[in-house]
Amino acid sequence: MSLSLYEVTIPTFLLSLRNLKAILEKAVAHAEARKFDPNVFVSMRLYPDMLPLNRQVQIASDAAKGAAARLSGTEPPKFEDTETTMPELLARVNKTIDYLQSFKPEQFGGDDSRTVTIKTPRATLNFKAADFVRHWALPNFFFHVTTTYALLRHGGVEIGKTDYLGQVPQV
Amino acid sequence: MSLSLYEVTIPTFLLSLRNLKAILEKAVAHAEARKFDPNVFVSMRLYPDMLPLNRQVQIASDAAKGAAARLSGTEPPKFEDTETTMPELLARVNKTIDYLQSFKPEQFGGDDSRTVTIKTPRATLNFKAADFVRHWALPNFFFHVTTTYALLRHGGVEIGKTDYLGQVPQV
Image 1 (cartoon, rainbow over the protein chains, first blue to last red):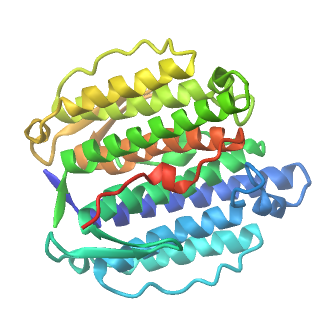
Image 2 (cartoon, each protein chain N blue to C red):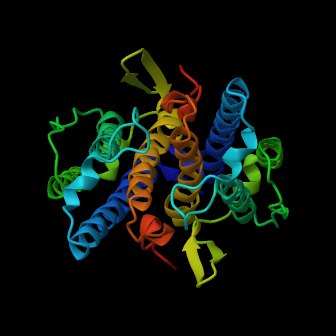
């Protein structure tokens, strides 16, 4: 059996972004219960030259929407990366979920040899679509979701891996 | 186009585990250059009740070998989780790579409706094979690789996301 490029990206991103929302909401509830400002989480870093929590969420969002746009041959919407509060980050995740839900599986068709091009600050990279999905889009997306989780866990929020994995559909 | 369950798991795990090796090797070199024992990394945690680095590497290994075994209907080898040094963790990653390389794509055949069963300390879970791959095996694997990265980055090792993503094959 096999998974189409749609099937291995869109449902995967959607479940994980919904879990990310629940994790961010737990962080807000944690701060409120302890009477500190939930928005202090937004600028937390694991090391001084690592990106803070808001950038982790923004890049997870960009990784998902960028993958959907590239695989469907469309232009991704530009999100302005202006979020500085937890409610704004939750809205960013919601906006990303709405965008991903707008795709239909048939938009991800196309032949096996098509190329996906990524421009990074250092280079222009050309991948086969399948390699882009398994070696770039998915690892990059999970990297930023997990780092968000790690930041909140490091910050004392009571979450566990079941929050990260969420409710996986069962038979 | 689509990816078989083999194509979306084995090459993905292999590239990521090779990147993990390179990251662990950079941590060893970092410690040696600063004249401290590289094995102090092994017990580092991001929070007192989070798992330490050696458990993160062991569980990443287990996630990969467990997925390969379940998808091929075979029994995974038992690795004893006795690693307490960086060289032992590197050997664990190598052993996992060797095991994953022993699989052939045709061993991952089987029909779309087959069920994968996971026993956790809390429950027995039954997933469709496709859901097991996209919502369990991949997110779980990347969670532990990323947490290992985060621990080392938090510990001052000079690594970046290009070390995590590694050399993705280009067209």
